Image (tube, rainbow, N blue to C red; front, side, top):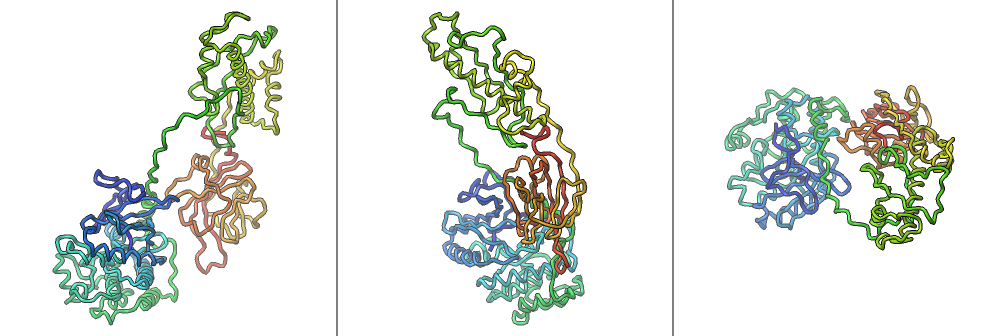
Length: 611
C-alpha cells in the first residue's frame, strides 16, 4: 500500500498549490503542495520532522463512513508496514481510526509510468526489462506480506533514478468492501484487470502476474494490450479474447504472452518472470545502470526532485527580555567566524575629548549617547530612558544642581560607563576591520593596533578614533574554477588549493577531501567541513557560505547522481562537489565521478561574505 499518485497522466504541474478546500495539516504534518487525486482520495506532499519528503494520502470521507472499509483498511495498512522492498515505497505512518483515514509513504521523486509514456512515448526494450524485473521483486515482498495488489497499473508504478517503485498495494481490497464502488466511484482500471477479477472470481497472487504482463505491453508499445474504450468492452475482451501483441518487440513476446494466460495456473511465478527478463537481456544477472531510463524521462525525475521547501511554522513573536541590558555589565561583542555574521558597516565613533583640555572625571558633563544607526550590529547597546533624560537635561556647569529626573550622580556614573563601552566597542570593531584588510594577528592586540593606527595623535582615544574611521575594504568574491568529470578512486584525495585539482593517492593525511576506503567522503583537515545539500537544492558560493549542517564525513549510501556537497577547508577555500556517477559493477576499481567547482580563499571575503 502507498499513498503517492502524483497527478494524472499528462498533467505537467507536478506540485499543485493547496486549494481552499484542502487541509493545511494532517495529524501534525504540514502540507506543502498537492500531488494529485484519485478515486480513493487526495495525495499531498509533506515532510517529516527530520526533513524527509513524504506523500500523504487522505482517504475520501465517504469511504471513512463505511465500517467494513475501515476494518479492511486497517488490516491492509498493518500488512503494508511489513513490506520493506527495494522497489516499493514504504508506509511510514497512518491513522485508520481518525475522522478521515490517511497514510504516509516515502516520497518518490519520479513520474508514474503512465505519465512517462503519455509524455515521451514507449520505453526501449532494455528499460522495459529492468522495469518488469524490478516490479517482480516488489511483488515478491508484497505477496510475502500476505497482500495481493489487485490494482497494478502504470499509474501505480513510479520511475525513480535507481529503479521502479510499486505503490498503492492493498488499497483496492479495502475499497471492494464499500458499496461506493458500485455507484460511480472507480477504483480499479479495467484495462489492467485480470480475467478472474473481471468475472468476480477469486483473486490470487497470479492476478498480479497478469497485470504485470499488461504493464509490460503498455510500456513497450504505449497502448493497453486489450485496447481502450468503454469499461464493459475492455472487460469482455480481457475475459474472452486474446490480447493484441503485434506491436510488442520480439524479445518481450514470450514474457508478455505467458503473463497474459487466461488460466492463473498457467502464468509464470515471480522467479520465472525474472528469469525471462534475464534471458531476453542475454544476461544471467540484470545490471541497472544509473541512466536506465531515456534522458527525457530522467529530466522529469529532476523536476520532481526539486520538491517545494517544507512549510515553516512562523516563529513566536519575540518577547521583551526579562532583565534590561545594563551598561554597567558590558558584554564583549562576539566576532563571527569568517564567512558568517552580518556584513561589515562603518563603525560608530565614540565622542573624543579634545587633547590638552582634560576635565576631572568627577566634573565631566555627561556625553550625549548616540542613537545606533539602522544597520547596527545585534550586539550594539541600545539607548536607555536614563540616557535620554540626561541628553534633555544636561548639567549646566560643574557642581550645579541637577533636576530630579536626571538621576543625580548615578546618571553621571551611567553616562561615563556608557562612554567606556563605546570606546571598547570602537576598538573591537576597528580590530575586525583590520582583520578584513589582511592584518590578522594573534592574541588580544586590538588596542595595540588601534594605537599604531593612530600614531601622531596626542591621546590613546584619538588613536582609537583614527582606527575606527578606517573604511572597510571588502574583497570581491573569487572567481570559480571548474573541474569536470573527476574520477576519484577509493583511497585517493583531492586538494582544492591545487592549480589542477586531480586525484592523488593517500587518505587520512590532512588533505581537504578524500574518498575513504570505508565507503565515505571525508573532510580531512581539522577545520574542514562537509555539508550534504538537500535534493533539488542548487549549490552556489552563497549557499555554501550560509549552510551550517556540518559533517566530517558522508557515506556513499546517502549519495546519488545529482546530489551536491559543499566543502570548506581549513586553508580558506570552498568547493561544490556534484556527484555524476559511480563505478559500474564489475569495474576493476571503485571510484566516483565528480564535478568540482572551487572558490579559492573564499572564506571571509567577498561582498556576499559576512566575516
